[in-house]
Length: 433
Ligand code: NAD
Image (cartoon, rainbow, N blue to C red; front, side, top):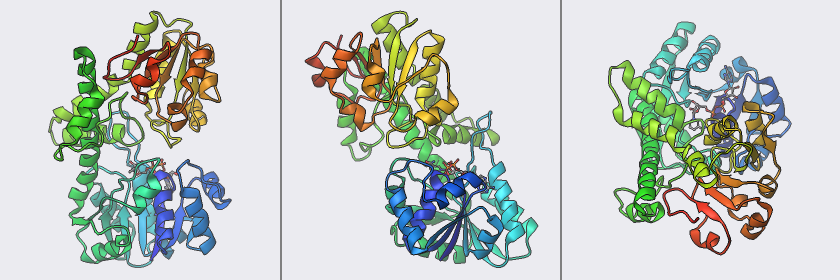
């Protein structure tokens, strides 16, 4: 199938490469000239395990092309996929300006029947708006379908090649058939539904996962007060098939480009139809508060943080990605700076993205975990990168001014820490001090 994917971010690029890997003829388009030049030179501008190898092979086999020429790319395609960003507006709603701009371009360049797919996460009703915009700019027939994306950054390639399900929301049998054929090699679980339900499936899924995270974080906070261990609790809960073990990992809360944005957008979608989504509002509130547990523990361990060197291990919102959008590390570092501390930050790959957001002169940028910990009054683990989990704890203890470890992700066992002199503060588990 001839496919054009518009937007070469985490979703568009990974999807485009994976469709090409399946043997389709794919053109990936972006308006960012620099990004397309980089991709054409064989360099992948984001960190995503396995993506480069797959992209190189698809370029070599001639199944994958990159361009900035949107018009030509649209005209070449049978299926046009919109995968541009839908960032949050200040009020929490989704900013649809990129989706709407692309819809106008599609309308202006349509040269015959095509299936237009909206893969970007968009509020309920947006596919209909996209359809209206395209129809206003063309005389040609087309069908619209909502095919929301569920990939996770860090495992985006394997998620795309092995999805739990593909959701296709459309009122056209022809579009449903064509898109089922495209996705058949990936899974048998193809859900064909109406457009509004497809749009809602995406938001409801993310909101539910966010709810699970905030729920276990509240249980963790309670465990700290009553002397229980949240990892034991989550393990015992997760064995119940009705609950399931995933997304029951207590920590400093969710971040990234999806959960924070999509939960707030769903609250706004509800508000627009005068529905007060109380549960989801609490999920967001709990999450916003959870990250500051790290600061509370630093206070407990050190008293005033003025002038204290605090090593921050991990800036990305989760391991195996360079994405720092809405990472809890942002507000934690900002609060440390407000309190007069000296954050010594490190991350295997997300430092340059983080520096674009916060570049305060008091921040010490460190190449490795042990360099950040050198002379530190405390280490805070914020992202559970393998390098940090496997760090030599004896060496760590030797280089620190005070052996205080705040484990924001429950990455270590108390047993590992017991042999040293560490004061250890995990989340929802008994502290060692
Ligand atoms: P991103 O910001 O990484 O990439 C968006 C890309 O679109 C950018 O490269 C930008 O230059 C390009 N673009 C914007 N306007 C354009 C135009 N007019 N023509 C061509 N290119 C244009 O975004 P992302 O993280 O890939 O997310 C895309 C969508 O997918 C969002 O709606 C997001 O909510 C959703 N989503 C993201 C993830 C994720 O993990 N990142 C997962 C599922 C769904």
